[in-house]
Length: 347
Image (tube, rainbow, N blue to C red; front, side, top):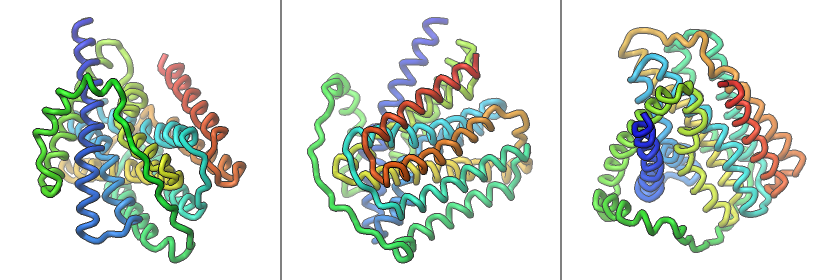
């Protein structure tokens, strides 16, 4: 039993690392090249391609968990809900420690508005007890509306573009021990000019690594008697949010704190509306049945999501839309309190 758990933990940690490397170094750059080749604006690319790129792990885990069936359904939902809280509290909290900055309220208001509506729709779907095709089409429809809003928001509420301050990024010392793994990984990809090929290889690898994550989480959950939704809300949520965190910290160091926060919020909107909506559509249409979610353990955590975004708005009003260390302490402290709540609830 100990050997089984140890193997599952090693597979989990290795998958987290590889998932981060594939997403950060191959998948997102290939998406970025595609957006430039198709002449998409930065806002449009961020709301669609880049959000899809950083949220790909959550989407694949949601799909795989649904295919497994049974109580594994809550792994997909739990990962997305937990990842949303991590993005909102930990990533924004970390960004606040990296660099103080003044952010434009206009795009923040847009993203918080659509995020709040997304959370409300998620709660509405679970409270109904049965998720139907009407619910999931509403999810996808709202995301389309969000993309339209992103494309036109600056025309309605003009705001200044922040100048980028480039900074050199050094690899952490511990990464030198993983260079053999990085070497093998790089051999699977082609030169940057073959970005379409790299895109599809990235998709395949993310899908495989997401499957390993779900398998490992199920093994750990069953062996230790931990509810699957708790593993999803904590361990899987943290692992799949690493690409979001790294990219947000990088742009925050460049003085683009607002972009870092928009990245976190935009990814959360994608996770809820597409990360859940798309797999649900496939499952309902292929199986010809609605999804029974009565008695789900996720509902209370959805309310925590709603409380967190309201708290975020209050904090920004207090700091007058400034990202500073006070904000970081409050956000990180709130996430630690949430983890304590999850552990107490599961015990």
